[in-house]
Length: 327
Image 1 (spheres, rainbow, N blue to C red):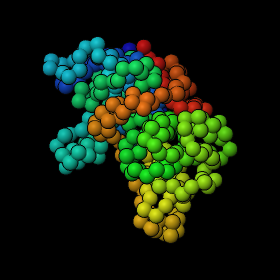
Image 2: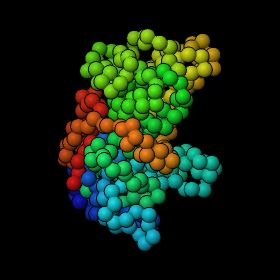
Image 3: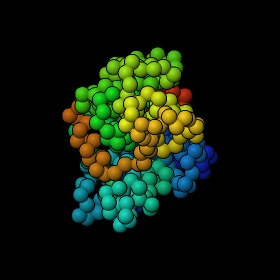
Image 4: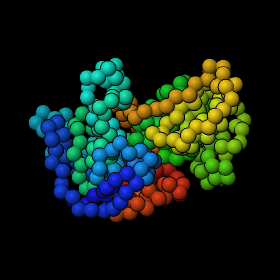
């Protein structure tokens, strides 16, 4: 099969021919049709995070069709499924037992410790695959499987405040703006200074204000979610939230957070991170998305142009989501 393989952190990432995977016990074989492109894939390919298993096929917003399933599987041959970042947990540690499987110390992640979706086929643990809602073409539903899921977890961690600041208006923010608006909340979109195109994109999706990260919004915020991997945005966001507010860091990797005055944190303000997702997050979002309804803005790339998709994401040339089409 054709696959985009990374040989080492920050190493060679290229189209290769690999054997079709053989699913193990409890696994299904999926023929991949599309795989969303995520900033985490950039961190994997660039070597910003390097605890994976190499060589590895990245990609963790996978949409495909079940080609083979074990006897008694909840997944049927021919069924359309989605495969997210969280690919395996032990099920027995204190985190798993307390409903926090996203923190499992023995967790394995798709496209990092487990082969991912920049390939024609992938084998996946059937427990961590989702049936997908009808009404979404494959390339439209793919971004929900990470940008949507981890963004949704970040949104719930931000609490129920009405005024939300989104720092970095990309894949996740363009999905979450639609959900927050449906919930009756107001979104304030912060982009790179001078990025009028992204600001117009945010406004078109329902943001009540859009401006640069160095600008002050017209209202004090109840919470802020930082999607951009820029540590300097943490103290910037703290200055914009009310007492008792929260700043949620939604990425897996971020540059160092610079020091800031304690007075900016005082008043029971909180900073927290979001780690991965749970299957419950996935079931909730995939049930909610058609009700909103969430509509994803997508730029498609064929498998052999996966590097172009990552480069365009890195350079900020994509509005909404990038998706690799496979078959």
